[in-house]
Length: 206
Image 1 (cartoon, rainbow, N blue to C red):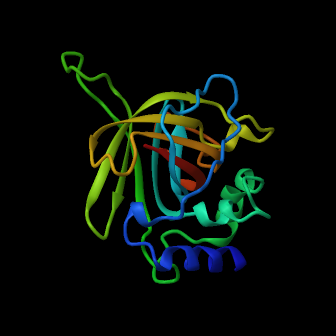
Image 2 (cartoon, rainbow, N blue to C red):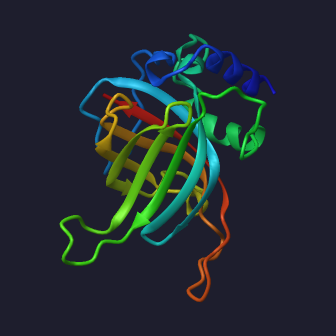
């Protein structure tokens, strides 16, 4: 409940992404295979939702909440970042209705198929929307790796994205890291697997 209380305070005064808490000079610890973003850190959200990752394809939908305030407080400064996703899984229900004020950004990732003659290759695409304004940004996957943890078989990939359309006030690069859940125990060829709970930190860079 303390975690939900902190999110409520952080979001109460936020009406747009430029109003979110500045996260300060926090640098995520990235494993080999994932490069640092080029631009400055803009804001950080924790996403809580449902996902399916089977093979190279991922579907995900979540509400995302500002955690820049939490990570900027000296006792928490960056140290709790690896644990926030699992904490969100345990304390936040999805979908969240009424208990936490919106600015709850909506995060949707899906596999987009393009025929061979199309100029863009098939692949996963992330769309982040502010439901209060309907402004959005769409990003393509630039890199993805298995999460560097013992239980990584059931945690969705760490992923980096580059913006390709929409409002770049959100940012032009995004890192999805410190993931929890999102991978079903079984992926069956004859029918789609069920969605499973997931959470992750999304770091937005200008």
